[in-house]
Length: 350
Image 1 (cartoon, one colour):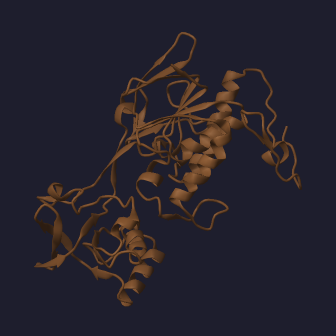
Image 2 (cartoon, rainbow, N blue to C red):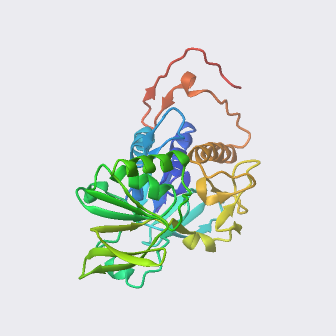
Image 3 (tube, rainbow, N blue to C red):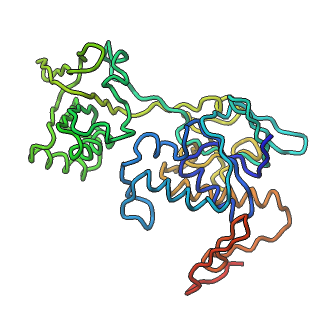
């Protein structure tokens, strides 16, 4: 039996930042995640994709953000159960929780923080008859390792941010990039649309609209795709086909935990502490919903902070907690070491 203070389900950015905020309060965390490495979707789906809305970073690669979060929490020595799915929980007579994974691991804690992002997810696949025959043999639904496309011919299908961003990024990696979209208009950011148009004018991206990929060809491995444009079909040779039509999120076993669910998300009380309808179980980040919810990483960070404060108050009833800026108090890890920060122009909140 692994024992901790907060059982965090999900090792994405919100789950990782929870470890830091809990550590400031001398609370330990153990993280459970279905993926083989920390980082959630940022590490699994688009580690090289730049993120522009993290305060203090005009731009930071998703993978780099995860590296920074891991470095930030290292001093608080969190535990990890990776490649494991949180399947069930029970509440003890003492009010603690025991979460069991699909591998039989049991983790005992005083609170549960569900930070599972969109939950488990599956790619939305185009309706092409033989597409499954080419999966991992030329058809890729995610860009995990951009270098695998070095010097290759690739076709990307889609009209959202992912399709646009990866077309732009891979134009400097692949020997040939073709972007296919069924409409002339794109759903992505205007800046990305303008960059794709610029790269098209420079001959670095082939843009085919309005059109759809309707067939795949090859003998065991993909060698060409069939495109239909305005009723006319044509064939393009390619090494990879990357359809980027988004993800279908699923809560998985969490859907059976007796939590209040709305549109595949967990309802929480955002007026207080992001607690669910089950006392002691919280939901933070993209996995939760409430009036005015925004699915942004920085919002998840805020929710994680208030969740940790709530857990501390529940575990220490009647104990006055003096909140200080870390610029005053420093950051003390569980090993007793203390990192002092700048002390200029700061005040204590009491």
